[in-house]
Image 1 (cartoon, rainbow, N blue to C red):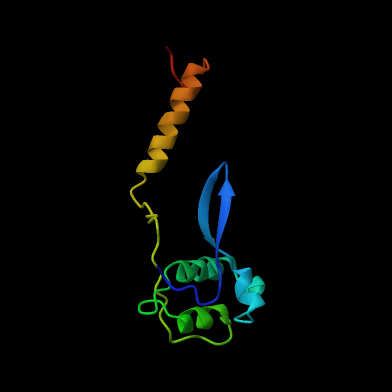
Image 2: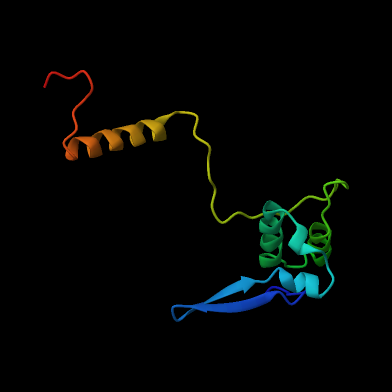
Length: 119
């Protein structure tokens, strides 16, 4: 069990299934930082730190530092971000070609014809 230094861990039940969540507003209640004013991207990183707090790779000081983030005060602290999914940028153009092929097939199913076609 990971520590929950700031009491952010909670449970939310949806459709009869309970999910573990980490409430950022709990940090403000404990005067750890003004989380409501943080950019969405920083809130994502902060929630990730709360989720992975272990006292070793993610400490309470790491969470305090990020909760107090300011664009005017650059930090020299690293963020131990552990993404659940990795999204890759595509420079090959393959997804665009697949989308075009799908649109072509949909137009054909709806009775459309190719521009300039004599068929």
